[in-house]
Length: 252
View (cartoon, rainbow, N blue to C red):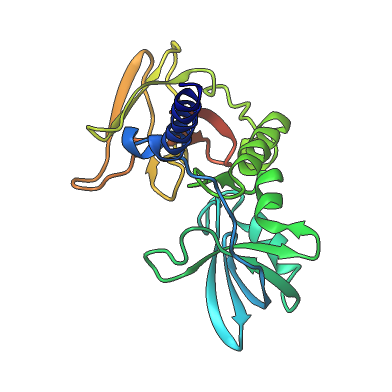
C-alpha cells in the first residue's frame, strides 16, 4: 500500500510538470521570451538622405537603410535638418547595423539600428529631440526609445520646444476619432487666431495645414478620402506653430 501511494505521488508530480510546460498553449497565452539573435554587421555610411534614412555600403553593396524606432520631420519642415546634420558627422565612417524582427519596409529599405563605436545613433537622435519614437512597440530597444522621448519632452529639446505664441493657449483638441478619421480643434479665446503655417501631424509623416480660427469656434479636419491616418491601435497627435514649436501633444 505505501508503494502505491508513492507511485501515485510521483505520477501527480509528473502530471503537474507536463501541465506547467503546455498550459500556456491550452489557454492561448503562449509565453514568448524576447531574444535578439541578430548579429551586428559592419558597414560604411556613404550618404545621408535625411534624418532617418541613409545609404551604407554593406558587403560591398549600396543599401538604403531606414533607421528603426524613430521618425524625423520631413524635408522642408522645421527641425528637419537637425537629425540629418547629426548623421552627416558619421559619413565615410565604419558603423554597425543591427536588425530587429522585420528586415525591410514596404519600400524595400533595410530597417536597422545604427551604432558608431559605443554610440547608439537612433537613440541619440530621439534624446536630442530631433525625432519622435516611432513604431517602437515590440522592438528590442522599446524601453530605451520610450525613456529617450520622455527625456527630450521634459527638457523641451528640438521638436518638443513649446510655443509661446499668444494662440498656443487658445487652441485645444476637442476630439480625435481614429475610426472616422477626423479631428476637431477649438479656439476657446475671445479673439481670432491666425494659424497660417501651423500644422498637425501624426506619429508618422501625415500632415494637415491649418487656417485662421474665429473666436469660440470649432474646426473639423478630415483625412483624405480613403486614406487611413490615425491608427486605431494607438497614435500621436502633434500641433506645431509656423516655426515648428509645439502647441499640442496628445497620445492614445
